[in-house]
Image (cartoon, rainbow, N blue to C red; front, side):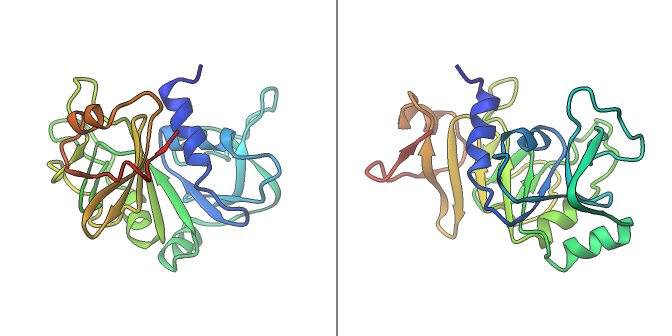
Length: 217
């Protein structure tokens, strides 16, 4: 039986299209590497200056100069390129990255993203997430539906400092897949065995749900 995170990553892998340039944010999204089909032609972009990176396999010696955005050792696939940070961010700013996956502390019904700062706790800074959220055509958030205390992370309005506003395309949690629309959050899929009522109870934001079209994952 898959864990919540494994189910989220399995579902998130279906968002990636062959031929895309994909950016994987710090935390859970970096594990998406392992859920992409081996025969899929995807170039994974790391904002510290690699296009075509892949995870280091067991037994491969680490190269201390090759790390992803979270500091984990990576290596490269055939056809990869390495460049400076200015070139990497020029790719982002010119919208050359097709989709980025990020974690979140909070998201809301307007597609606002808060994922860099909890007041009173140390943060290294907003980093590249701000520019990725603003410039990449499609932003998919992977996060737990509720925090460790059971409080909703899918809100009517974010309370934490924003990374970027109105930037999210789709939210994937262990409970649901939701699209940000002009009318609000539309639930397109719900986890197997979870009722619509339980999903609404776990969510602060109002949800648009058409049960006749609702998928399961």
